[in-house]
Image 1 (spheres, rainbow over the protein chains, first blue to last red):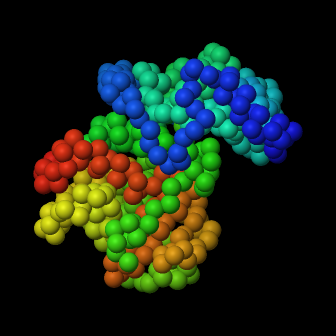
Image 2: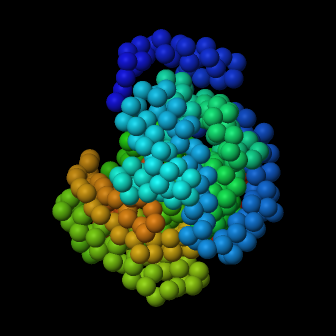
Length: 250
Length: 197
C-alpha cells in the first residue's frame, strides 16, 4: 500500500521538516526515550486537566452515562465519529495508504446513507471496520520525528509532532472537541458526546490514572508514549525489556 | 486514543494477576496451556460478582501467586535497588504489591465476559513469549503478549504487553518518578506506597 511518494524518503523528510520549521524541533530523536525538557510547564497543564476532569468532565460523564441508554450513547458516538472519516481519508491519501483510504471512504458513504447520517455503523458489519488515523501519523509516515513530550490544557498528553498534527486535524474536522483523557484525547467520536461516553465507559481505567496513581503526570506520560509508539510503529515501537539480564539475575 | 486502547489500558492491571503456577512454562506448548487456564481463573473470580474491596484482595493474592513480583518490584527501582538491603527490598516488594492491588484491582472488572485467544508461543532467549488476542465483549480484539520465565524457581510471568503498553515499563516509570521526588530514599517510598493508591 505504500505509494509513489514513498520513493524519496529523504526528500519527503526534508519537505516535512521545512513545512514544520519553527514549531517542530524534529528531525532527530532517540527511539524509546522520554524527552520532557518542559516538564514543569507540562505539569501545570496536567494539574489543570486533572481539575477539569474532577470538576466538570467526570461528573458530566457520570450524569450522561447514568441517564442515557447505552444504545443511544453509542448512536451519538457513531454520529460524531462519522464526521472524522473525511479527515481520515485525507490522511490515508497523504500517507499513501490506498487500502485504508478506500476502507474509510466506504465507511463514510455507507454509514452516512444506510447508517442514517452516521447514527449507525453498518459498515463494520460489511467488513469495513474503523481504521483511525490522524495528521500526526501522516507526519510520522513522512519521517518527521516525535519531538518532545507536551501536555497541553484541554488536549492532554501529546508530543510536538502529535500536537502539530492535531492543529491540522482540527482544521479538517471542526467538530473536534477534545476531552482531556489521561492518554490523549478520546478520539472515539471526538465530540462532546463521544468524549463523555468514553469517559463514562472507561471510568475505572481513567480514574486509575488520574486519581489512584501516585504520580498521575508520570503515569499518563508513560502510557501515552507507549501507546502512541505502538499505534504508529507497531512492534518496532515497543521496547524490549529483559529484567533478568538488567538485574544481573542470569 | 481509541476505545480498544482505553480498554487495553484498563486490562494492563487486570491481566497481570493471572498466570497459574504449578506447571513448567519453559516449553511453548505448556506456556500456551498456562494462558488458557489463566482465563479460567480470571473468569472464576469475576463470576462471583465481587465488590471493589474483594477484587483488590483477590488481585493481590493472585499477583503474589502467579507473577514474579520480586523481579518486577526490583526492576521498578532501577539502579537504586543495588544500594538497598535485603530487608529494604522485601519491605518495598510488599508495599509495591499492595499498591498495585489498590491501583489496578478494580479494573479487573473490565475483563468480564472476556477470553484470550492464544495465537502462538515461542522461546525467546531463556523465557517463553505467548502471543494472543484478548476478546472482550464490545471491543475489537486487543493484542496481548505474556513473558513467562522459571527464573524465580517457579513459572511466573514477569511482563505483559497490551497494545504495546507493558507492565514493567509502566510500573518503573511510576516508581522512578516517586523515587526522584524522595531523593532516592527507598524507605520513605515504601512507607508512602503503603498508603497510596
